[in-house]
Length: 219
Image (tube, rainbow, N blue to C red; front, top):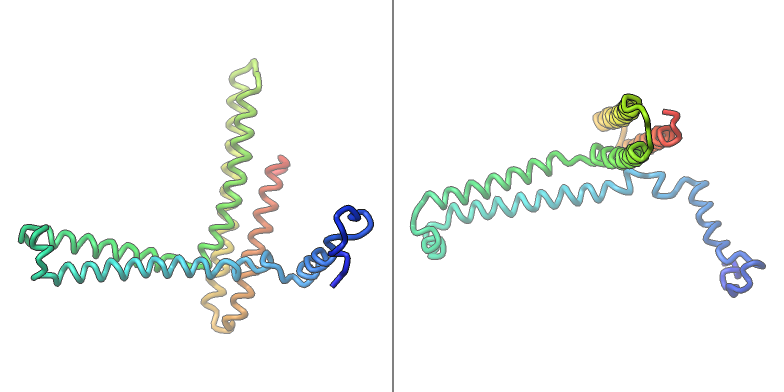
């Protein structure tokens, strides 16, 4: 380990206090081993955790529905519901509906789609902030021609809407590519995950380029 790490801060001009840390970061970047190079791998476990949570919620509501349906001789239900069957059926149906809804959400959650959508939402939030800031700046600018202000505002809005559409198109293209990777019969799971990472990384680069172009008024 480089002894420079233990130099006194007062001597920071004579030694590199963070030399080893910078070397470590450079090795990660050069070897492309950083988490930013594996956006799918770094986030898939979080998506699977959400999926598991909703499956657990579905199971809990299913068990509650089963318990309510079979609790014929439970004194608590007799006291609360007054011995009537209708409220009991209502509670059972509510629990079943909640169970089915949670199960549907769990089935809908897909790491491929969720991670791509997460990247896209971040880009959309950025362009929305840029658009809102430009709209405020335009409102604060003094114009003598009201029609000119309206035309400028509409032109900015059209550009913003075109940008949003472009972002969604990139997202749809990436999801379609990842779906094709998923159904491939010639790729094993390791190869698929490698391609997933590259597809998400490509999406990030594309969206970064689109947002930068919009920020610099070259979109």
